[in-house]
Length: 278
Image (cartoon, rainbow, N blue to C red):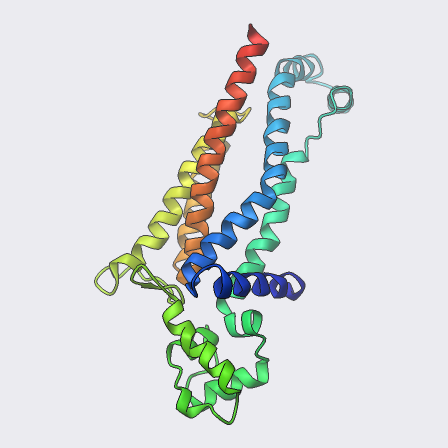
């Protein structure tokens, strides 16, 4: 479904892995995540400017809501008039989220199917590799092939060059003592470092969400605001326990980038507010 995005992402990730990341899958994901976040940065800045504009319009909008509280049609008309006069798009804040969603889904495809999207091995060949290595062709079969790869058994299926690449990926997937192709579990005795990935992914999501609410026009004690604050980290935690650890690493790096980005923007907006109030 998202092959048209996943394939270029796979090519970029493999290029980074092969040329910039010292054949480390973890470093490749870190570089790739920063690359994506930098590309999205102009959209994020536009979103925060949109939020700042909404803060400026807040008092006027409240007056309109009070004045036309019994006339919904007039309320909508006057609100839209206020938005148009001030070049404010109420849907402007949704664009970064709409763009990030297909990116996230495409990256998930790349991480669960690295043989297909990174080194262009077709589905039929993957089936043959799974059969000759006696692996069930379900779940994260491509990651299982990398983990259980035996170069002596696959000579008739793939070229020696491709076989060497796959064999090297088994070591490349290990990052700081964690196999990024493994799905984390709550059993800390199995691999505590692996367990840390979902926890850190949820924690960085929470901190970045908390910081972003400093610029929000909605009061912090608003029930919807509170639920949104916890919904993102909980979803990140759930999916980090469902997907290979590489996905969790993407969330961690993205969350850290978002935290520093948010601190910078919050400081910028605070200075802008001081100038306006001076």
